[in-house]
Structures are given as structure tokens and as C-alpha cells.
Image 1 (cartoon, rainbow, N blue to C red):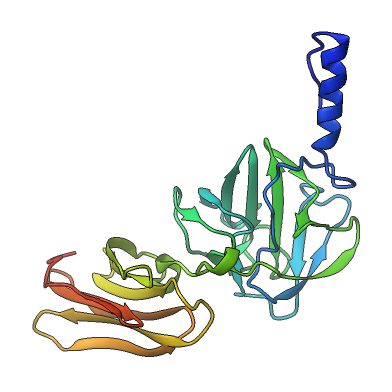
Image 2: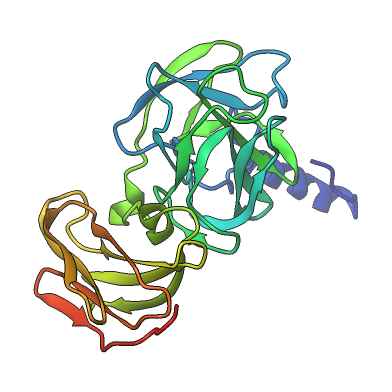
Length: 286
């Protein structure tokens, strides 16, 4: 890092400050986010690195049966890119902006479950591992970038070794209890949120609509007892039809509950524990 030299004394202070900001052996500033493995808590995969990789500091996560495995955000941030390069380069990929010039990239995805501008936590589910683009087999291509330059990857404070293959186990456990699932991931591609209702901190019910299929979708996502089975429900009722309900003890969410509802009014709702919500008939035609 270069500093403008104002005086010898100020220069000395600047050099000392610069040294304090660099993590030993990582070559990255200590102000970098606390990046974690981009998989759910407890998942083990091989971090493969090699010379000539493009970019060379990127990591390919490999494992037998990894295809369609959920991919989660490595740190809190805002989704800045959701792109599809077709049969070349990254294929389907996502970029997340973590602030301070830091971004992460997730490439060769099978599916993408987030939208540009969406806020995510560490552990938020963003897609699934695939084999799209210039890929020779199912894996997750992962980068940590600072001001547009790919840096050597650090996971949970541990430097990924270069150039070799190393086993890592995810400690990305939802950022202290946050739910790793999103409504879009649960309901699927083509669905957009058209209404939502909080459940007094216990969770949130989402009403979604797919303009292409004319279907509504409801899911209830928990904010309490994450990862532990507890009473949760979601329902959707098309006016003139019977109510569809998904109810039970779930670890993360209830639903998706879907129904054809083009040009029809719907009633929707759900519950987490003793907190519930039931709407009136509305959203007629959407």
C-alpha cells in the first residue's frame, strides 16, 4: 500500500498503521469481512487451488455428489450481480457486495435464488451448485475480491493453502441464528414477493406471484428456533376453492404452498409458534 509522504514523522506513522492492518500470511487487510465457507454449517468439501486458474486466487469447491448442494453467502452484504453467461465463463453466477471494496463471487451455479439489491446475511441461501458455463464437472467456483482484484481466500480466519487441495468444513452457521433460506429460493424461479407480514419477531409470511404461470406461492420463514423443529404453518386459499395448508414441526420454514390464481382473489397466511397471520381476500389478479 502506497502513502503520500507529507513528512518523515507522518510517513513513519502511516507505515506502522499499514503494517497493523495486514493479516499475517494472508496479504489482506484486517478490515476484510469475516468470510466463511459458502456452504451450510457442517458441510465438508475440498478447496482446490492451482496455478493457471482464472483468476489464479479463486477456489473451486469439489466433492462427490456436490451437484445441486445449497450455496450460501460467505458474509453479510447486498447482492450486486445475478448473471448468466450461458455455456461460457462463469455460466450462472452471483456477486455479493460486502462493503469496503470487498465482494465475493459464486459461479457455475445450477440455480440462483436471490435478486440484485437483496440484503443477505452470512449463511443466507443464494443458489445451488451446478455445472454451467466453462465447467468440466459440478463444483462451486468462489472468489474473494478487493477493489476488483481476486485475493487469496480466507475462510473463518484460516488461509486456504495454494496450490493444492485441502478439506474444509463449514462453520457458516447462519450468522448467529439467522435463517439461511429466502422466499425466492423456496418458491422457485419466476416468483416475486407481492406481500409479506411479520409474526412479532417469530418469523415472516411471504405471498409471491409468478406472472408467467399465474400461480401464487406462500411460505412462512422462521426467525426463532432456527434449525430446530417447531410448530410452523403456511396456507393459501383461492376464492371459490379449498384452502391448501402446510403445517407441522419444521426447522426452517413451512411451504411452499402453491395454487393457480390468475385473475382470482386469494387469502393467505401462516404461523410460527403462537404467532399467526390471516389475510383478507385480496390481490385479485396477481
